[in-house]
Each structure stands twice: as structure tokens, then as C-alpha cells.
Image 1 (tube, rainbow, N blue to C red):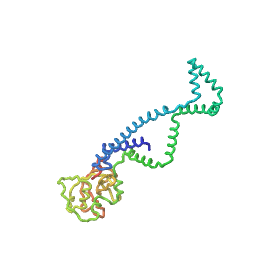
Image 2: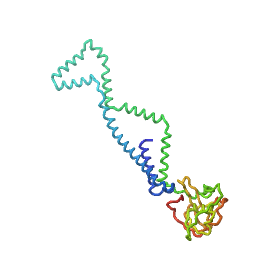
Image 3: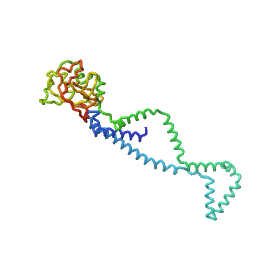
Image 4: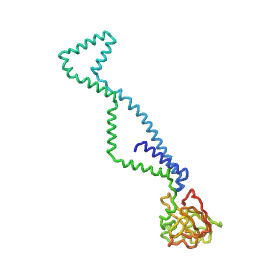
Length: 330
């Protein structure tokens, strides 16, 4: 994966964390106490990506003049008889005295002495070759560098596995999910998949001893958390729920035994969610995952082990409501 792509991916991940932490969507996935940590994590990701991008840009700007400057200046220009002839001819054209000297040199070159002939034979074909070499070097100063870069690129493309790059691209999946889909909070399907596991059954699965709970408030209608109702109905030795009108809020769940009002209790995040529910008697025409507020009374001694400690709730009123901003209990 290219470094530029890594930086962009880091920006997207950090931005996604900041988005859900600031608009409240994070409550669909984690408990409220984790919001500051989400904000800090997202801000750090965006900051690191910004630093990396600025650093890369500065390195690229410094590398361009450094690579282009010394390449042509460092090329040696070898002595060449052809170039010397051109220089001599130019001098002769502008200086009559130099023209005479040039003529003498040409005459001497046309009739070399015995000592000069071996040198002429040995260098006769070298002059054009050296001229072509210089021309090619000037026209293509980066030829060797380009060839080396192409060779290196070829080796990298076929000399190792790209499995790690593919794995890195998987980090894009949660970003797309948050920005494009925004998965909702867990609901009726999660409750049904939990089977008979509930908060009350998990709390005392190895015990049958009931405990004394503090008395309820003296109001005519007592709003209560679903987890508190299930726990008191199963384990309160004082039967504090008997005869009391309660108000419960949750979403609707159906199974073969009937209709329920339910909530999910989480300790840290949605991955550890545990259902808590009460079976409704007298509530009809409700759809799964529909949020309701019901009033009524818990039927005495209805939360028993045979029913996984799920109490029966005799409904007095039902009110449909919108999905709350915080759908879980803690």
C-alpha cells in the first residue's frame, strides 16, 4: 500500500471515530463513558495523518532539486578531435593569424610522419564513437537512474507477497459502514439469538437464595429499568414488586411463547450485550423492534427457573415511542 493511501486511510478512520463520538451514534455500539476516549483516539489519528502528509510533502520538495541539480553538471566532457576541429575552425574565421596556424595544423594532419601513423590508426574509429557517447549522455542524463528504478520496481512487484496490503485495505470496511450504512443498535434479533440467557439467569445461575432489596419509591407509578425489574422479580425476598404499578420502556420481541418488552444490558460495548425482558399479557398488534412504554404490574412469583427467570407483566397501557438516543441499559 502506498504511503499516501495509508495517510488517507488514517484520516478516514480518525474522522469516522470523531463523527460517531460527536453526533451520538457511538451509543449504538459502546457505553457513554467511552465517548472521551473515542474523541481522543480520533483526534490522534487525524493529527498523525496530518503530520505524515506534511512531512512527505516537504521531503518531496527537497528531493526534486537535489535529484536534478548535480546530474548534468557532473558529466565529464572528454577531449574530442571533432570538437577540436570545430573550435579551430571558429577561431580561424575570426582571426587571420589563427587561420594560418589552423592551415598548418591541417596540412600536418593530412601528411603525418611515421611516428604519428600508429596513433591515427588506433584512434580513427574512436572519435565518432566518443562523440556519440557524449551526445547520448547529454540527451539522456538520467538513463541509468531510470533503468535502475525500473528494475527495482519490477523486483518489488514480483519478489514478495502483497497480503499485508490487502489486510490493510480491510480497515476501510468500518469506515464505509459508519459513513454509508450506520448500523443501528442491537434489537429483537439479538434477543432471540441469545436463547434463554438473561441478566437474571446469569446473575444467580448457581444460587437459589433470595436477597432483601430496598423498598420502592412511594409513587403511584414507578418508572424502572428493565434489569432492576427482572432482578427483583427473581431474587427479592420481600416481594417488593407485588401490587405495584410499574412503567417499563423497551423494544418489542416476539417468539413462540408470546410477546415481550426487552432491553439489552451492556458492560462495555455491544459485543457483550445481555438481554433482559418481561413477557407481556394484554398487548397486541405490536411489531418487532418497535419501541414502547408500558404500564402494569408484575405477576407475583412468575419469574421462575423454568422460564429463565423472565417475569410476566400484566399490561394496563401501551404507548409507542421513538427509538431513544441511548438504547441500552448499563
